[in-house]
Length: 221
Length: 327
Image (cartoon, rainbow over all chains, first blue to last red):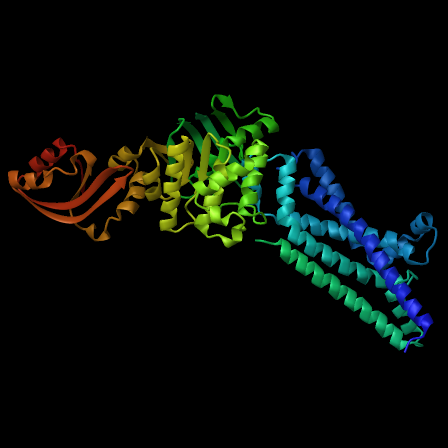
């Protein structure tokens, strides 16, 4: 059904997609957790004393985060062309999509983290405080309680990332979406197009099902 | 010893400020079980949270064992909190930790010697009767069991004080009394000082040596439990006690007397002596006996007829019976 060249193209595209999602996913996880946590503690009087400068600091991070989150991905992609050229050296191939994807998905995940931490019951936190919990112990309790929501939030972020990648395909970022776009647009190989699309769907489902499963496993409430 | 001196607490909101506590002066002695009762909104929960500084007072002095809690650094405050364990109305366990892990967390926070942790967890679990549920998550426990974990977690490090914020209010009556007898048991074994906040005076009467009644942010009454039930001074206290006595409402239009008699004369034949000696007839409308810790207090509501009512009443008063007339 497919010739060896097509199969190679498909395998390469699949590899590129997993590569991009993997690298971006790691960056987004680390930075998103950091920013989300920062947003949370700078707003919580029990974690950090709410001085005027802390409040200003919170507002600055929150604003930057929200602005980055509100720029439509495709616009961000174009905005970042000079930066990407400088950082990655090219505008073609999977690497070119990385800066835009990271900058776009990190603020999204940061908000998800912020919300997940915020949802932790104040009663549980109060109990920990009443025991004389240090900052370290409070963080432990809060993360332990927020972990299932964090996992679902991260799953959501990864799924969104795959969506973003399809947009990146337009500027030639590579991956399955790019394959589908090229073969679909020029109409010469619908079979390969549908295979690519189906693979993207399968990826999304696998991530979603795994994420839900892990989240449920961690949730004892 | 916990001391409150002229303590005020005002919560500032956008529209108006709320005076939760108004000039509180209170001393809580070592090893006593103090009950704090009042209707909701009286300031009880605020009062107990001032002790471990979960809430800071607007004005006034609070000291624990002579140390003022106001100027403590966070670390010193935390160290002080190790000794001021607290249990809660909704238990507030960490839901994603097992029973064992919840207690372990408390011990780890309170820097309990690491080598003794495992042994201590088993000890407290058997004390609260939950050894078989060690590796369960809180979700799989009943309300009463959750509170037992709360208690195990609180007393694990041998604290000097145990603060109970409506600890039995979310439980059914039977379970509530089980928790009370557990607390009594722990008090006997450890001499921990207990501050017990509740709106249920019937629970407090079985547990506490002394009761403080609060209303609108003020302490309106402060008496040993038994004398509070024999001789309540304030209307709110009387209302709270009436709830326990369950006084029937059909007495509304009648002229009747309330007799309150305490343990030492419960067994005497005072009433029959009165009827034989004086020209009075008696109609008993309602009666109730309350047990307060190890004492009994009787409440008797009767109508009196005849020509020597006044003499009969003086006779009762001479037998140390409290008499009150309802018109």
